[in-house]
Amino acid sequence: MDGKKVIDIQGNKCRRGVAYAKHEMLDPRRMLTTSILVKNGIYPLVSVKTSKPLPKPYIFQALQEIKKTTVNAPIEMGETIIKNILGLDVDIVATKTIKKRIK
Image (cartoon, rainbow, N blue to C red; front, side, top):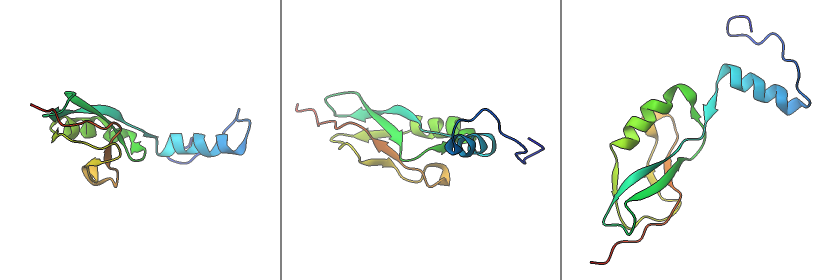
């Protein structure tokens, strides 16, 4: 690297390795998985994930926003829980169906 410019990449065995290394050096992103509190559900938490990889520097800010969130059952797998978190065009999506608790 020379500042923010990639000069050379070595050790890769395919072209995809070059693209991955460049992306990892210039704009690293990660899928985020966690859970959100559920009210009136048969389980107290619903597992969630990002709809696409999130820029790595925003992971802890996203976790803080998610921590503030509570949802009411029922929840369907694939349901968007938080739309466009932090204005990054990334949604937080349920990865499990949680039925409503019958009293």
